[in-house]
Length: 69
Image (cartoon, rainbow, N blue to C red):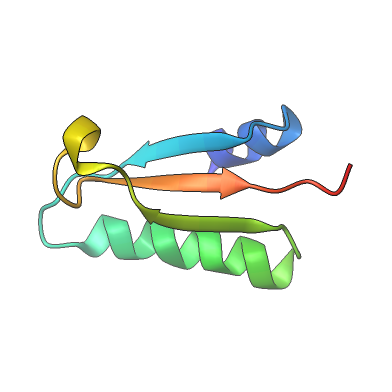
């Protein structure tokens, strides 16, 4: 959460959150947090599985931030 917030403060355009595959619990928590940021804090972002060729299948999430100015 801290990394995401720091990335927003720095106005990063794209970040990758590595959560591993496992049972999918951490991935679900990450996606829940991002969804909450988008809906409750009105932060424009999209997220999806990171590119397979760079991170493997389902082990990371790519987050893209959009800023109004």
